[in-house]
Image (cartoon, rainbow, N blue to C red; front, top):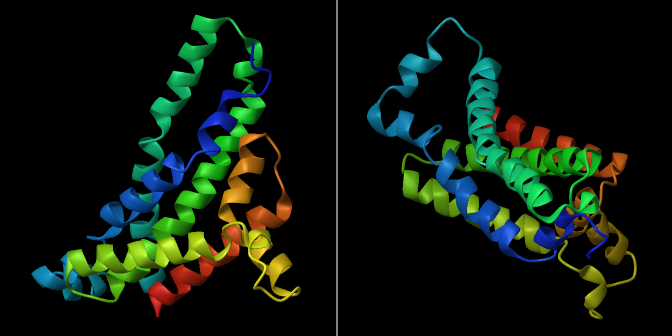
Length: 196
């Protein structure tokens, strides 16, 4: 029997990142670009709600949709535990921290997607820009210690931004405050840029 939680198995592969990197632009590409293309953006911005309310509502809608797509993941874990009878495969605390990690990563990518959609009138261009921003953020911290070309001061900085490392820790049930702060800060930055 395998003693580690099954969540670790999924996050040791690139399939999770492939799903997130490809679905996030598709979910967010219409948030602002479709409004601008159809001419409803001006009507939306003249309603009696503030700009921040519009930004946060669109972001929340995209994030809730993203999280709903991951709900079957919990059902799969319950089923797997019932089939195998291995309690170590599924621990509620580890699953909760893993889902929090998915929510934080999803929030970051939804904010990036909203920002990309706010830049253009074309949904396709918005999706492509969001994908490029997303893959850039993901690759920025992808195993920086493996590169001998980086200066010594850059490795810890890039290690702090390594989403792959963050998700590995979340999947083990480790809730690290600086990771949460990183995602909240960068998500807030992209929401501020969307607002601007």
